[in-house]
Image (tube, rainbow, N blue to C red):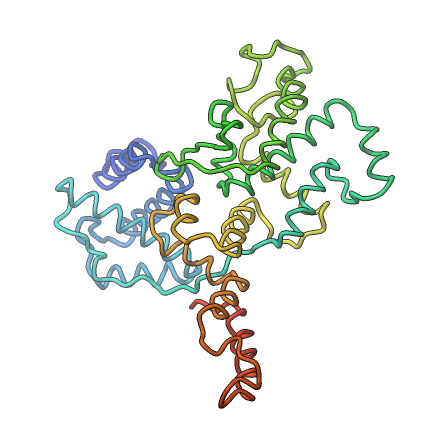
Length: 369
């Protein structure tokens, strides 16, 4: 906790610190730890200020806290805070610090599920082209060739790296944290495989197609060596020395250090603008596009679940709602009257329009409340 030595000695704050240590030992992500800490500290501060017992808050007190929380935060934030508190009280109950979970009887505010942003195949190719052109935007004609010819050694290395980043993210459906943590040892170009540590530090494998493998190979041959010998201050080291950032990181920045999450976000935002893609396209959009395009191509939902590393199939099923081509194909293949012509049997005249109408309806993603 952050309230000084006196606050640190309070039973509530001591229990909270034990809870955070348990989360960290369990392999919770930094984002989860940060979110839970923010929510729990705010809750315990409110409890103390309003004279409630943190070990056995009354239902009336909890409702008052929810009302105060809802005044300044959206439903998503309220739901996240409640998830943190429920997890905290489950922990304290197991540790014998509380008699039970006082939030067990409180419902979580229902929140709308937003459909993820997805790139078309053509938009994905535009993003790759922008990376190959070092983020200059126009990737066609003699202008692009002239700019490519005028790139410095460092610029060419960065362009090779950026293409490899996008190809890898799109081919393997990686989270940005997984992309940043890739090492030389985690990529097997011969087998076309990549292994990552996902949420909860659970290892999973994903696959790399030919374009991704070719992009990584080009980057390893002509891009990474240029970056690996650069260190802060402009001095140059020897490949494989401690100056070579983070000892085996796959993607390096222009200083020769490992390219982190912030650096990846910055580069992909620059490339989004150069490619003329709409605002809202993020690194995670490539992961969404990976899943949706696989389903559009006929991949089994459980295969996509495995490649994404989802614990629950229900999480993966969200992508069926953003895959109009899959819905249309399933309807056409399954409905007995979907492909009948107007002259086929009784009701045929109405079958054509009604089937088309149903197909259009199926192709439109449903709204998830």
